[in-house]
Image 1 (cartoon, one colour):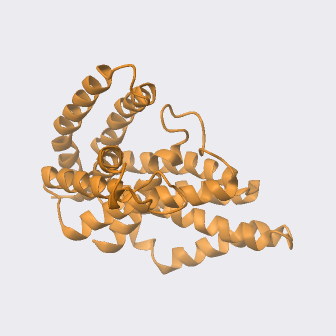
Image 2 (tube, rainbow, N blue to C red):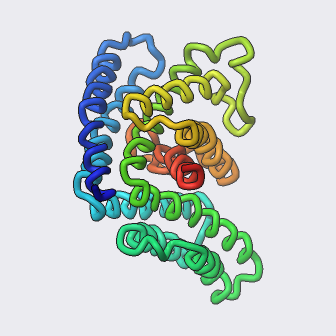
Amino acid sequence: MSAVLIAEEAAARAVPLVAGVLGAGGVAVAVLPSKVRMRAELRKRWRTWALVAPVFLGAYFLGGGGTFALAAGLGVVAAGEFARMAGLRRGDLAVLVTAAVALPALAWLAPRLLDVRAAALLLVAAALAPVLGGDDRTGFTRTARTAFGLLWIPVALTGLVTLGDTGVAVGLAVALGDVGAWCGGTALGRRGPLARPLSPLSPDKTWAGVLGAAVATALLLLVLGEFTLPLWAAVTGGCVLGDLLESMVKRESGVKDAGSWLPGFGGLLDRIDSLLVALLLTMVMT
């Protein structure tokens, strides 16, 4: 059976689960009392999830072209948000956007070309605009930030195309892991050893949240029949490190969110930061 058909079957098996989780979540946020501080925020997030989940699963029902479109669309938007935060110029943004489309296309049509040759071309592409523009003041900084953006966004998103049914599991597990991290932090992160911040980059992220994410991702992978220790470690690592990584970028940039257009989350990067790291780790570990 082809990888495309396997991915379609995985998406089909996930539909009842996603529908059930969204239904239960919708009821939960609808009955939240007004005194709950984040009630309005949680309702916005649920509405966003209700729109995003069908798009994510629907891409896998459309086969390789669908996952390419999903990865490329996410990559183009995320590249624009990253370029603004990193203070990159038009030439740097053009490199990021081109890679955001080209790399998923290669992953779909010619995955054998995604090897060390592609890595070398990406490094050259990252330096192209500063070198040709003669930027001797910020050129190295721009090159380093562009190279980081290429690895963090377009390279990571090729995993949506190449991982097949595992890509479905990773995307859903990361989503539930983020919910588990919030629940764990809320329930167990008020006092005691689990209340310690994970990093000064994000004081609200505690070890209780790590525990919640680990439990939630394990449960989701088990339900989907995809649980393995390497995959669970990759997804949990993405849930934990992805948010901290973006926090580091935002703190240096002096911004609160990558954008303001996605209700309940801010920008697209604020929603997929964990997914990007999880995809990278999954491609390495599985």
